[in-house]
Length: 391
Image 1 (cartoon, rainbow, N blue to C red):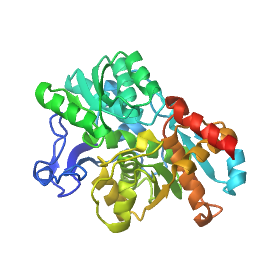
Image 2 (image 1 turned 90 degrees about the horizontal axis):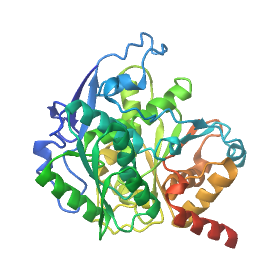
Image 3 (image 1 turned 120 degrees about the vertical axis):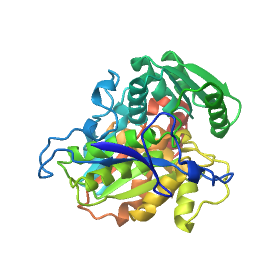
Image 4 (image 1 turned 120 degrees about the horizontal axis):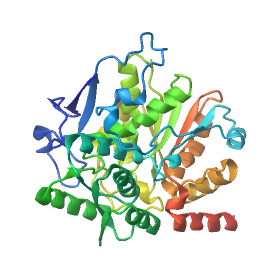
C-alpha cells in the first residue's frame, strides 16, 4: 500500500508529511466565515492482500498510512455492534444495530483520530500536539497522548462540559480555557502552532483526523460479515466523522472489497445545522451562532464542511435536522430501551433514525453511530430526565 495526500478541491497530490495540512493553491482562496478551503484527504493505492474480496487477510491497520508498530499501547477501536432487541421491536426494524463508540478508551469515537495522529507523531519524532476542542477531541487526544508519551496542549472554551475538562486534566495535559466560543479557542491554537510549532490535531485541519475515523466503517463492514449496511445515521457538527464514515466505504469499494455505498444520513441539531442547510441549497450561507444542548456537534463554521458536503452530494446522502427536545428524548429512549447511555450529540443520530423511520424498508440493515458516552455531559442528561418526567 502507498499513501499520498490529495486536495479535495483541485486534486493536486502531496507527500504525507507533518508540515503539510492544506493545499497551497486552494487554501489561498479561503473566504471569511466559510469552512476551511483546500482540505486534503489521504489517498491509498495498492492491494490489501485479499485475493477474492472474501478472504479476511486484511486488517484495519493495513489500510492506514502509519505502520502498526508506531501506534501507542491503548485499545482503540474494535468497539461492539449492539443488537438492541427492544428498540428493534419498537421501531419495527429487525436489522437495527448500534455501533457503540462510547466503548473507546476515553469514551468517544474521537479516539480513532487521536490514535492515528499519535502514531504519526511518534513515527515523525514529534513530541508536542496542539489542538482546540469543545471537549471530546480534546479529552481524547489527552488520553491517547498519555499512553503515547506525547505533550498535549489543549485550548477549549471555558463553557465546555466540566467532565470533559476534568478528564483532560486527569490525563496530565496542558489545558488552556478560553473565554469565548470554540472558534475563539481554535484561533488561539492556530496562533500558538504558528509561533511555537508542534503537530496540529485540529479536526478537519489535519487530514489524518478523517483518515483515523474511517476505521469505524471498516469495522462495521467486517462485523456485518463483510456486508455494507443500507443506512448509517451519523451525528454531524463539523462534518469530520461523516467524512470519515464515507472515506472508509470509499476505500473498501476502491479495493474491490465492497460493491456499494450505504445511504449515509447526516443528523444535525436545529441550532447547528450549517451542513444540512448547505446540502439543501448547494452552498454554505453566512455563519449563524450555534446553540444546542448537543455541545459535541455545536459549531458555527464546520471545519470539514466542504469534505462532508461533497460526499453527501456525490453519494446521494441524506440530511435530517432534529430539535433539542428530540435529542433529549432520544437520549432517554436509547438508554432506557437498550442500556446504552449516550451524550446528546450521539443521541442525535438516534433522533434522526426515529425521524426517518417511516421511509426505511423494514428489512433494511440500519446502523446508528453512537459517538460519545453520556457520562461526558451530565448536565444535559439531567435536563433530559426532567423533560421525561414532565411527559
